[in-house]
Image (cartoon, rainbow, N blue to C red; front, side):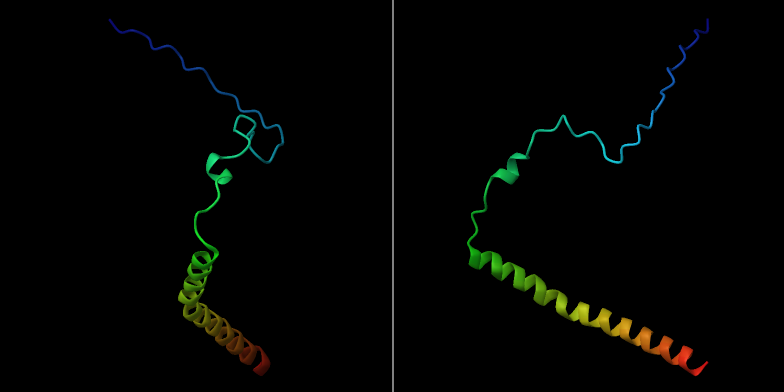
Length: 80
């Protein structure tokens, strides 16, 4: 009536000390990296600077916050 299930084979992992995975089965380069871009230098430069302009204000806010924390910490430890 009740059939016994076969036991699963226990997998044993062996640490050979390597820190990176074996990637020897992959092709030498991905196909998309061999193709160049069809964009002009002007388009690439415009895209880069638009991204930089977008991040200037958040960057200044973070730098201001870091300076404020540092100034408060300096005042606290200077007055002790």
